Image (cartoon, rainbow, N blue to C red; front, side, top):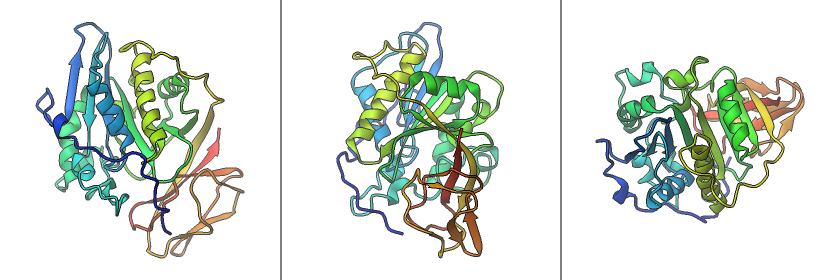
Length: 312
């Protein structure tokens, strides 16, 4: 499997000007309104090459966006991976060692292992804990339609549906299946409470449209909770919403992993149809209309191979 060379419409920029935050943590900026209201976290660069989040976060800071109520925190997560970016190997800067979006569990955070991602997650832990509502901005390797990802709590679905864009939702009834993402850390990972935590996948990493959507959704998210006024002109009328339930997450076990045909995402398979082989294991569609999300574009043992879903 090989990735098609991307079109570099947006590239990383120097973020050193944003290093000194105002709460004693590098690359974390917090603004308090002095009025009652929710604490909203806009998080960028959980993966180092997903630069649409960087565009949205720097836009909020450069424009001097301040909350009308409550508190706004803007954070840049995996700066070390971001700074390793190279156009010659643009997919390698996703992470240095660990996937920063799979280690938000006590076992990892309180464990003895060490890596740049674990050190950063431990530093960011109080930032995530302090937030009532979280928007974690991501992008995809392949040029597919944008979509939400969130645990299957009604509070998450209600906000994603209310924001309205993107109109596609990947709902996780039992978690991600390959680790604990940031949006499932602590109180956001359980059914109790009212804190909303969403991932927005904005499209292909280096597309300008991904950066534009990331910025628009950040404003929409803040406006939904009353921290900013709705942006004019108003968002376009919502498209029909399409929701998918995550059924299975498969991890690459062997270097001879292979799909039966090239996949980019959103392909559908009939029940029992062969999707991939993972060594001796055959990955087959568990239901009719099985829809593939985020199929791996490179064989890296230990990383996710494919997410299998069904329309809701």
